[in-house]
Length: 386
Image 1 (cartoon, rainbow, N blue to C red):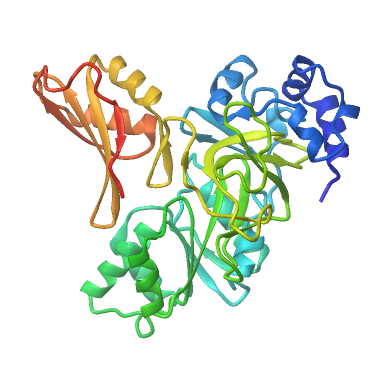
Image 2 (image 1 turned 180 degrees about the horizontal axis):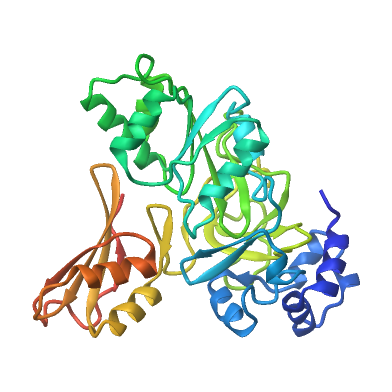
């Protein structure tokens, strides 16, 4: 891993956005030489990226090269533009997948999207690094996906746990069973919570399932290795738990804090990046293992692997000509669902649903309700999942 002091000097010299942050904090590269010194620099909040990227398009001045020199550019909700620095395992997930026993003998169905979101390429690159054969399946197309899984003798799956549930249910309806018609033996999940029911189902079907934690901005942060409770920190980034208000690193036994990542990437050096996720250290392994994502600092709610924010919803709904709404995230039939109730005298058209989906990247259920149904102070975005 590149030395912290080296990446600080490189970023200061070549990244306008990072240099501006340092100057605003009254810092020079010589002031940050250790992990402890990082706390001199204020946390860069994920929620601030859209504004910064508008001011210095397209990456907020955070890269050390021009946009034309990166491999790919993706878009996350916000919008936030994410650069892919290198063609290989850019997001470093091979570390986690190798621990989960993915290797050159596997044919792996990659059920993450390759469209705008980086998740598909994130795992494609990692799997190819390990020599595995990748089926770029993306999301949806259940019938086609289970046919592919059967015909090709797919041995591995990467994607959300909820989508694998859909695939397994559809296969069982056809009388196709894991271990017979389906050769699936391993799975790697991220972007959603893995329920106890899903864990039990994988165990029953002899699917060796692991999970990991990462973001589009930072790539891999931590992953399950089944050697101890919680998730092991990656060796490829510096991870801190910080007070969301002050940005100061919390004592190891202080409880929940914001996950703050310093990414030692010469092209996209994200330094002191606040993910907005809350976590805590696993007792007995403080500073080494995370307890997973325990919540969000901001009003963002993760739905089907995508963060939906109240500000996003309010902006698009008002642009569509409505003023009062309430969105409720629930879990039905082991699937995340977001239902949006809009006060309107008219029916909600498919076009309105499509425009909302374009912004939040998740298909909502949208219903019109009579005006006056919602109280003026009603919470606009609620998460009812247990």
